[in-house]
Image 1: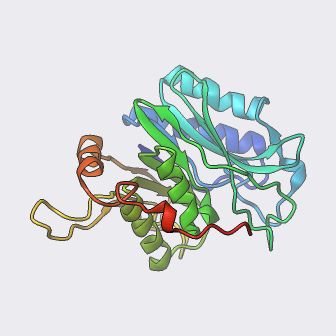
Image 2: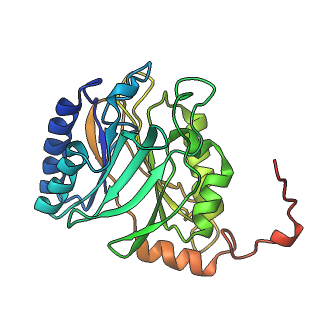
Length: 262
């Protein structure tokens, strides 16, 4: 997998498509199987959000990435301000190697108190298969709620993609470490570059060696500069870990958990 830690042209759909397609070509040439873009690449997450920049999922902007995926035989997780009949959404669309839509995630935990007040929130966390691996998505603020990763784990996710547009620090990194560990999922997180930003990173759920000694879950991490960030997960080792260890769903006691309607 390759993370895209580059700036996108702000509120420039032709520009973000052109640059995005060139990045997909570069990543594919370097051997990427899936190319993951940061949050709302279509607009560069320009603030305030300009709703006139919302683009349709069946329109030419997304079709440009579908065509690139099919031409190059690579998966693409593209992010956009999407135009929908029910209102604009902050959407991640995972496109398969043949240019087919595999998974759509509308950001559930929108910043409704601030920048994303006019957006329509998603209502579910779902998974889909890519190259035999079950993928899910948490978009930026989604990752700050333990329920997001837990819902994806319960839905069968093995790898969770996290597109971001946020300042980055050790607290947010530790959040992702915890989400990976407690749910026995691998996590790949990408962000826009910049001072105090960047630091796209990936985490393994494998946190102890066979003798019980702690391991660093960090698989890879970028600095703050623009770059492509390769991540590689050992899925055989992760699946073995999930099959024999005690976290994730293996010893849950849902009958003891209180359920609140609000």
